[in-house]
Image (tube, rainbow, N blue to C red; front, top):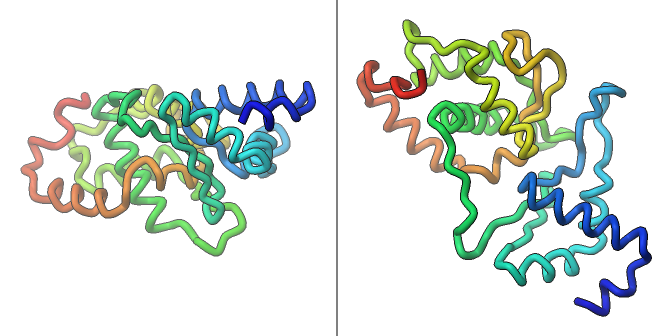
Length: 208
């Protein structure tokens, strides 16, 4: 591993440090990302670098217990700790948002699409939360209350804002293919069946 690293040019060593830190910070690196300034999808230089030096990056991170996974079909590079450590504890609202977005991604994503993203809005998400009985119609959460959840998800490359602010009803965003690695769809289906059986008063009470 050290020999392979030393063969890198200085500029590549700097890029190596950058992509490793980005992967550790975000948990996911996407092959394609949305450039808001150009209003188009672009290929990720970070993804390409890791793809070219996958063994080097994998071996380096494995020293501290991290496993690097590259899913070419979805265009996602992710990391997971083999000791099941460094897990983030999410609040209820963020957990339910992830729950709903995972369900939406599975049901609306086109596997044959060039960019495996799903375009969605904050308003559609609110309706989805209601339809899935994750929040009650008479105790609807405000759009602004979901701002911290949206910010967290974008920081980890799970969603990408297209337009609007995170606290607005007209927020438009992409659900990225990385959502598929956050929670298995089989788990979503099982949890959804359990949620459907709950009385309305037990749904989303703690998220207000």
